[in-house]
Length: 121
Image 1 (cartoon, helix red, strand yellow):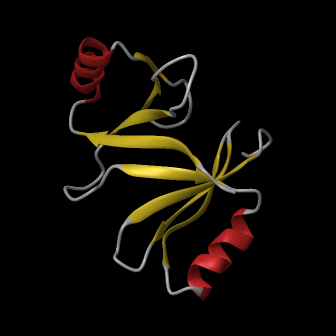
Image 2 (cartoon, rainbow, N blue to C red):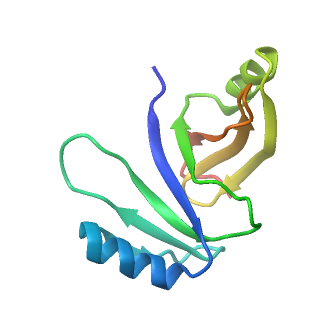
C-alpha cells in the first residue's frame, strides 16, 4: 500500500524557515547540492514519521505538499485521471532520487507521487 514518504514546505525565506524548524523541533536541515534551491529536512532517526524539504515559494498560493511513494508513476498518474483527479505538474526527474509528478484530488488538494529511481536524470 503506498504511503507518504516526503513533505515540502514552500517559504519566502528558506534560511529563516530552516532556523525556525531547527530551533522549534530540533530538525536537521541541510542545503541540497542538487540543481534547484532546496533544503533537506530530517525529522528524526527512528520510529514513525517522514522527512521532507524546504523550498523557495514559486507562487503566492503554493501549498505544503505531501508526497506518496509508488511503484509505477505512469500507472498511478493514469489511475488518478481515471478516477477524476488531475495532473498539476507532469512527470519530471529528480536527479539521483526518482520520478515525480504532482496531482490534484477531487477537491483540488495537491499531492506528489514519487517513483524511486536513483538513475533518474
